[in-house]
Amino acid sequence: MVDDKFTINRFELEQVLVQQFRILQELIVLSKSERVALLNEPELILQIVEDKEVLLDKMSLMEDKCRQIIQELSLSLDMHVEDTSIQALLPYFKPEDANRIKNLSEGIYSLAKQARELNHASQALAITKLDWVKATQLFLISIFQPDPGYRSPKGGATHQEPTTGLGVEFHV
View (cartoon, rainbow, N blue to C red):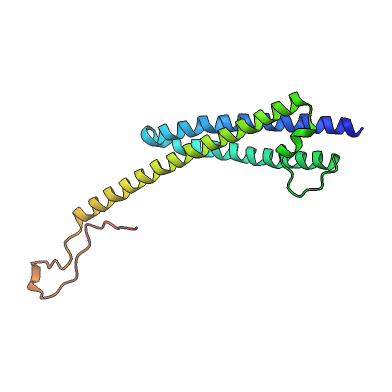
């Protein structure tokens, strides 16, 4: 029975890794779409971000499931290490199973790295766009606000507070 449980857990681990791999593939596609949207279609960004959040939630659930399976496998092998990894379990699998699981793990790592790089690039692009919007806002506000110390020629007052610029409020 223990061997059957071990085989079931190994199969389940492989299935979870496949799901993680597919989620990361979808995340990369969305990240690429996000980058295009940042450049050309800003109205799509909110939906893309929500879709990415759903995928990240799924990924988090899969990671928890993966940790649980790894723990069950290590207990069935009497490995009493706090932080057992997939790599530590590979020698206990059949060579063809170990090879598939190793390849999936490496693929997941590679896709996660690619997704992280895409997100950093999108973040940099978003920050640049935001800086441009702030600079444009400052320029437009400066057009409507008088110079500091400006005195209205009306009434001949010797000192007058600067007037506000056409009711435009500015918040930084």
